[in-house]
Length: 465
Image 1 (tube, helix red, strand yellow):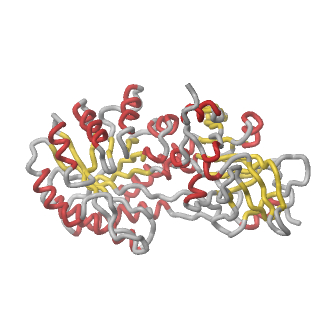
Image 2 (cartoon, one colour; image 1 turned 90 degrees about the vertical axis):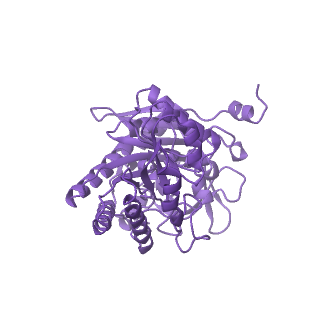
Image 3 (cartoon, rainbow, N blue to C red; image 1 turned 45 degrees about the vertical axis):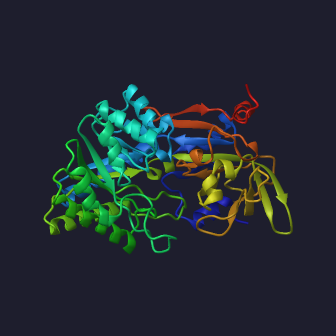
């Protein structure tokens, strides 16, 4: 029987940029994962911080190169979408790069902005794009930022009445954006996004609420497609419709000089993943310039707010296989020392597939398996990959334990899983290890958080003092 290594190498183009094998063991971005397991044990979540900066710098360079190529006379600005991961180490890694800004989603984002400002990580010149439907506390916090001199804090108006609050509570001149309600993809259950202001209301809204004000000016139009930035007729149609609206509004609003095309770059969730980021960026820049030139309008500054793309590929979750159970003639279960429902909720709730690879035993024979989590929920399992309807892993035929990893899990999983709170069946959150490289390229590790304790859960449930 072939080895697991032969299976992977014959099925995929392997090794790949972030995955290679040395001495029967997997390296993730040249990090020997078995060394980390020997030091910290499993289950554990891992964040490889340098990948965040690599992705940021790549997109910045690619947008700037495209603008130079097409003689696009405006500026590109990279914003990090905080809801993808609010952890301090993520924010600090992103913001240490040149010209990186922030996009927020709710009121509690603003105290994070305040904390980062106190640490010197952001300045009052940093763009803070405030998105989402805003409850009173969120609007209050935004107003306080503006009054305190954060002049590039820009509330993105989500409904017709939102600006009234700022007019009453902001005491200085300020800028706003307008979110344009996009039409959803035809297969959606509804036609138009619930977020933003409908296309036909934008011009009259500007004239009635913004143009007449002595304090507020319109800086930006915002646009976002739920299905992401894809090379489809739907995406290009919606982008074009959005840019035509920008041109139409620019002719009556001199202060409008920017667009925000949101996030939506995909991340690698399969070893067969192919996406031409350079091509898509060039097409976006070229299309915007063509439409603006056709309408005799100056091209806008382009903002993006990439979240999953920024942080997703930095994450991994590592498990030990603690048992194997043959439940009938053909269904073999590998039981992990964790839970998909609590640790990787997208795998359970959205049937999201991640890159799954063995960490050791690469030269052992393999077979088809189902992977089971620790909760008593029948849905706590993983049995197919994005590229196939099956999962294959090395056989467990000796005393050497088998370890597996799910990769590119860095976005959303902690917040969706309720990090720090109670978990399904009270399965504790795993320990979290940060991996970095010093100036000499030497790998360093740090335990950010130990495994969640029973005391912390009992306190949430009202049993603790």
